[in-house]
Image (cartoon, rainbow over all chains, first blue to last red; front, side, top):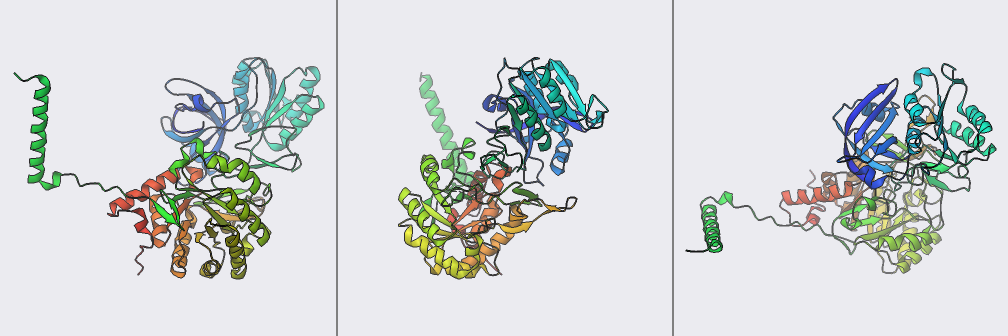
Length: 258
Length: 339
């Protein structure tokens, strides 16, 4: 069951461009949690009609209020409004929406994130409590986020930056190949980030015969599957919807050339 | 010595008596009897328990918003637009936000009329709500086949879409030329059996009353308006339109005044009942459409901001009727007092 709840901001910090918020979400996790990688749809003021989908970085059942952590960057009007909210203010939130990454607690995953696609993978890292490996890509050292949290919750955390200012100089798919060459005993590669990155990571995973799940992004309307605007082209010619069928899809299903 | 129960009884009746005496002395103290407002409306013979329908294309087949509330709370559900065969719709992006509105270009993605009848209609039939099927055809022949199938399956009304701005064939062409609108209406009417036929009009015309009259002349039972207004938004940095199809249909609060004006014009031009829609997100918005001449209203885009919007509109309408001393919400219909 999905719910609409008034959620209080109980923690807010900013690191570089990334804003980290913890929300008291009533019974949202209890009623609608499926797996790591779901999202919430947040109303961003009265001036904007459309809610903004924000991936859940981490969530937990709690009493009396479940806790939902989101990490986002200012991308436009909606996220700018959201970034201006202060501690103690409440947000109108629909959640938890969509299907996240299918995972087993005893599994071991290669988590690959790019930029603001990194946060939902933290929930995946927590889910497998220290067994998974993270490969995180950022434009530069200044853009890197959540590193300490991943280091705490992963067996190994590798960093790539586009400009070489931190970790490996280059893109994450090169690190994915390096890692899989040494060790391909992962249950799956789980990836979230820009579409070109996802395409390259999916290709690398396929080369090593490791299953790959990707979290897709598209301009969204209702967030629940009623308006059909967030279409994602599938290899079989059909169009699925990021909000309801996704956001996580099997990389093999997606038409990467669309 | 009277027992406790007896004492209580005496005390109660004494209090009642004092209250009645006081109310007679000071009449204002007596609460005015609240006459319950009758929210039911009739649209082309179809009786709905309240005037709020959810607009086609904004509510899927009800399953998603049915997770938030009981669909029986609604007056009617206009199902997602159907075509004879399954359609995958247009490539993304299909949506762009605008000031107080959205542009969409979904392109009639739907599973096809047969899948609707087999998989979705039985679900909708579990609820105490009127089910309106919305259909689009490439040819009059396709409208005929769909009407026959839906009439046999049993829906409460068929909404004939002759105004989709987002498909190349059919769609808008039928809605902008009176003779084609009449042809499609006649075809639908003669194959829908006893199911009432409502024709959905496009605002993308010079004179909407011409099309309304053509549909009326061809036997339509009701009219619904307005569909979306064609629009476009461009990203100035990339110089690309936001929508992959370049243009799309505008909906949301921005279009409400256009909808009110067009409902008013059509109500003055034809005798058919009207399902008014376009930018409704409050009881007051809905009341404007009803005063302009609508018998019922549809809520669409407002659901995206607030899934509960149709219920807010329903309750707001009832509150307005009560405040104005009406006994029925339907008394608002056509009640505008133009200068």
